[in-house]
Image (cartoon, rainbow, N blue to C red; front, side, top):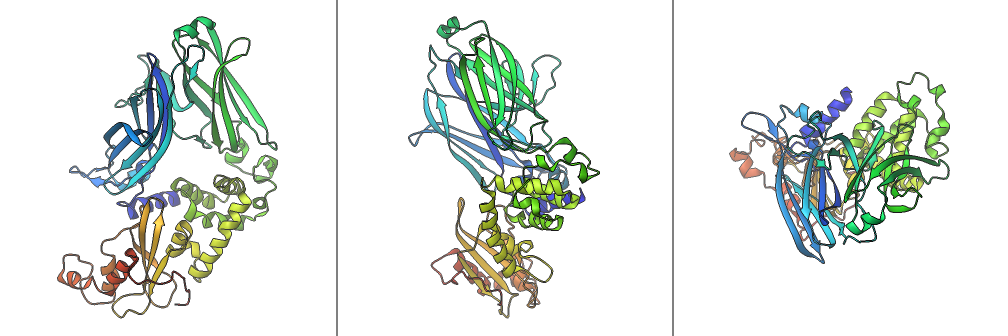
Amino acid sequence: MRKLLLLSLFFVCSHFAQAQIEFHSQVNVFYEKQKPYAEIHLSFNPTTFNYKTQLDKSLKAKLEVTVLFKQNGEIKSFDKFGLQTKAYTSVEQIALETGAMLCQKRYALKEGDYMLDIEVSDSLFTKEQKDIPVHASRLSSDKAYLSEIELIDTAYLQNSNSPNLLPDLPFVKNSFILKPYVVNFLPDNRNILRVYTELVLTKDLQKSLPEKFVAVLDLYSEDVKNPFSQSTRVLLNKDEVVPVYIEMPIDKVYTGDYTLHLKIERRDMSVIAEQSMPIRRVHFPQKTFAQIKSLDSIDFGTMPYKGTFIDKMSLEEISYRLNSIYPLAEQSERNYIVNLVKEQKEVFMKGFYYNFWLNRNPNINIAFMQYEEELKKANDIFGTSTRYGFETDRGRVYLQYGPPNTIQDVANDADALPYQVWNYYDLPKQKNVVFVFYSRDRSTNIYELIHSTARGERSDPKWAAIIQGSRMNADFTNMDSPAYQQNSGSRLQDMYGRQINPNGSSSNGTIDNNR
């Protein structure tokens, strides 16, 4: 737990003003009085925002959200609104945040097909989700409309005894208070699956249907080696809009990919309407994730990695493998990795490693071997006598972003410590990204990342002064001092400028470990 806390603090503190916004969205079309409207749920990770100190010394982050509905490239509906987090008393409190910040918006639409773009910005960064298809269909007199399945975190019937889940944004629909669960990933600690949707019937269609019918929720796997299926049934009453809320226990649903299928049936089992969605589950049998006292009691035949190359790894090797994928991992995955390596429970470690590659490529052997080639390069080039290459800043950047387009290596500048400037011409949603590394001495291969223009990476406006000031007897770290103003734009800044501007001279992009 201590390692996890320290890691969280590292990310919040060292990237406090450079965090990359993380959010997820869910959009669905519902009907009210036969008219369509789009309902959007947004879920934000509060630990990834840029926080600012308020007058009362608390910490808050503010977001601006832009929503665009387009048809054939033309904007048909536009909205821009602001959000802000709750007040935090300290960076430590932010680092320990586990809940999501939720937002719900509804937009009336005319019938037709749309593309939805969502953009979220704080004072530093912007993240987008683009071209999300939205279909607002015309209701038919002979065919029922069933909205897409929504996953629900918590639900209550609306009455005087219901807890106030979200006092500022009550998610209320058809007598239900619903707290959405925006992603279709079900982790180990979630053992109840909750879904919500709505069946819409025109008046003509209501006349032809019985007063009662059944909603059948099926969860199944098409894995021939580990077939699985289970069902839950709920009786429904006919109405113009029929709310469908179902709970299903999933404590016996183990790690894998599943299909969630909902169908509305008459008593003769003929289908009125149906919807499906994919689900990813990470969960091991109870005796493997409880407090395990003896690994001998585990049925390894139920483990998804059984029979794969991962199954043959020793405890020492799987520890190394988990650490080595850290540069590729998302923030939540990095937290898992730290805990897994600390606990040294082989079943969990191998299970997580298997699912890590499965999430990135159904053929885990190919994904693993491709990364192995790059990992070997990083270890050979950036490794030291005490650290693997992937544990160094340059190795981590290399594995996370790939090889840079150009590298400017200055090892013998009399006025500065050894440094390198890496340039990436084109990263996802960013162009001409620069990383600056420097070495505190001339006798090791350890270069620290001191500054970058990449989103989510360390950014220090005093980077040039630190590299030069460490070599000279002047106040180079004080940005207001005359020494800083007069000297911070020498050869170091010139090299940096060349990397930002590809028209300037630059190296051929090769990496030489013997410099």
